Image (cartoon, rainbow, N blue to C red):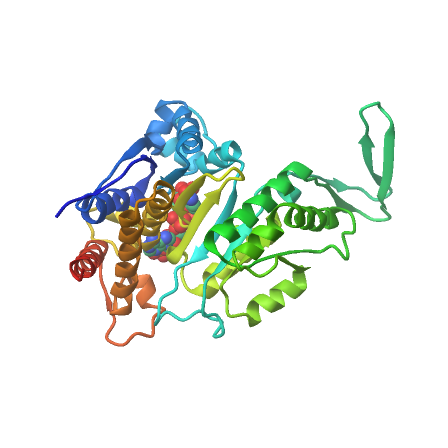
Amino acid sequence: MKKIQMKTPLVEMDGDEMTRIIWQKTKDELLCPYIDLKTEYYDLGLENRDKTDDRVTVDAANATKKYGVAVKCATITPNAQRVEEYKLKKMWKSPNGTIRAILDGTVFRAPILINGIKPYIPTWKKPITIARHAYGDIYSAVESKVEAGSKAELVITGKNGEEKRLTVKEFDGNGVVMGMHNTDASIASFARACFNYALSTRQPIWFAAKDTISKTYDHRFKDIFQEIYDGEYREKFGAAGLEDYFYTLIDDAVARVIRSEGGFIWACKNYDGDVMSDMLATAFGDLAMMTSVLVSPDGNFEYEAAHGTVQRHYYAHLRGEKTSTNPIATIFAWTGGLRKRGELDGINELCDFANKLENACIKTVESGIMTKSLAALSTIENKKAVNLDELLCHIKSNLEKSMNQE
Ligand code: NAP
Ligand code: MG
C-alpha cells in the first residue's frame, strides 16, 4: 500500500510517563504504517526540559507559530516531589502555561461521545465544547486578610499620577479582600479565538458572564464580545449559515446547558471555565475521553489529550504489568492535528485517514472492547475490559477494515 504523503511537518511535542509510552505505540502501530509521517520533533519529556533549561518548550511553541499545527503529549508539571524524583535543576514551569503564553491562545475542550457510554444528562446528544479564558481574574489576583477596624480601598494611579480611590469595605470584624484584573487585549483575543473556532468547527457559540451584578468588570467582557462579533464576525457567521453569537447570564447559561442537546461551544470566563470543564468532563463520562486544543487568535492550533501523564499506570508499566490505560484522547490529539494539516495543505487523504482512525476508535468501544475505566461506565452488553496493547490491536484491525472497504 502506498503511504499518504504530507507537505508541511506537524510540530510534535513528546511528553512523559504513560502517555509517552502511548505516544510511541500510536506512532508505530496506527500512524507510521499508513502515513509518511513528517514531523518536527521536540522532546518535552521532563529530562530533556531540564537538560535544555526548558529552552525546548519555547522552541516548540515558536515552531507552532511557524508551521501552524502541533500535537502535544501530556507532560509533567514539576512540583517539589518531581524535583526530587528527577533531580531537577529547578522547578520548571508548566509547559502548557509556557506554550499558552507564547501562542496567546484559548483552550477548547470537547468530549468524545460513544454510543453505550451515556452522559449523566440524558438530553445530551452532541458534545459540548468548553472554551476557557485562561488569563487573569482570580488566577492572578492579589488578596489579603483584613483585621477588624481596617478600611480596604481600591486605588488606581493614572499615568500622570492622579489617584482614583474606591472604598471596598470598612471592616467592623475580621475579613478578607481581593483585587483582580483583566485586560481589553486579552478579552479581545479570547473573543476572536472563540469566534474563529466556532467558524472552523461550524458550531454555535455562547458566552456568559455576570454582567447584572458586575456592571463594569463582567460587563466589559460582554461589550467586547459583542463589538468584535458585530464588527468582524457577524457577516462570516451569516455566510457560513451559523446561528448568531448568543450572550446570556451565567446562571441562565448553566440552566440552558443542562436542558440542551449539546452541539455548541460554551465560552467561559477563567473561573467558570475551570469549574465547568470538570463538571462537563464528569457528566460526559470520563476524563480519558476528553480532547483539548489550544487555538491562538492568529490561527495556530495545538492538539492534546485533556488528561495528564497517568503516573500510577506508568509505575505499574515499569514493574512489567499490563495496564488498562485509555489511549483514545491521545490518538484524537494526533487525528486532530493531522486533519487540520490536511485541511491547510489541501491533502484530502490525510483528513480522510484522520476520520477513519477516529471512527475505528469509536467502533472498537461500541463493539464492547474498551479499557477498564470505560467498561465501568458502559451499558454495552458483552463488554470486555482489555489492556492498552489489546485495545490498540483492535483499533488497528478496525482501521484496516475501513481502509480495505474502498
Ligand atoms: P492524570 O494523569 O490525568 O490522572 C489522574 C487519574 O485519572 C489517573 O490516575 C487515572 O485513574 C485516571 N486517568 C487519566 N487518564 C487516563 C487514561 N488515559 N486512561 C486511564 N485512566 C486515566 O492526572 P494526575 O495524576 O493529576 O497528574 C499526573 C501528571 O500529569 C502530573 O505530573 C501532572 O503535572 C501532569 N498533567 C499534565 C497535563 C498536561 O500535560 N496537559 C494535564 C494534567 C496533568 P486511576 O489511577 O484510578 O486508574
Ligand atoms: Mg478545574
